[in-house]
Image 1 (cartoon, helix red, strand yellow):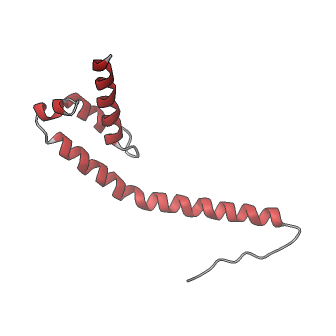
Image 2: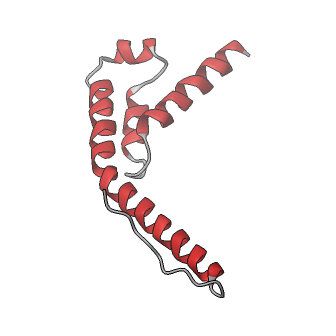
Image 3: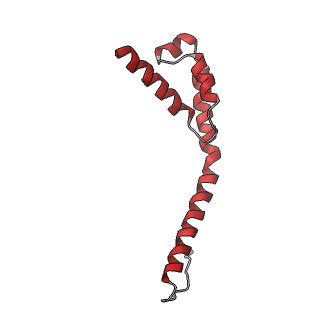
Length: 97
């Protein structure tokens, strides 16, 4: 296992902590970028499953075909199923009120 060592200087301890912070941010950003595509495809598979449902099946879970189209219009980095869950929850709460 490789370790990253930073030169230690007593006078520049604050700069070292900044360097560690920047390295940590860089690693986090790299990991997020690498994992974005698999998450995107997983979200699209879930959305495709919902889109394959009949109108009656969608109504049973509190959605309609327009909701699926609106979920497809969400940004690519957002999970469309979260949007659909919010829509279904709002409709259920409105019916109960």
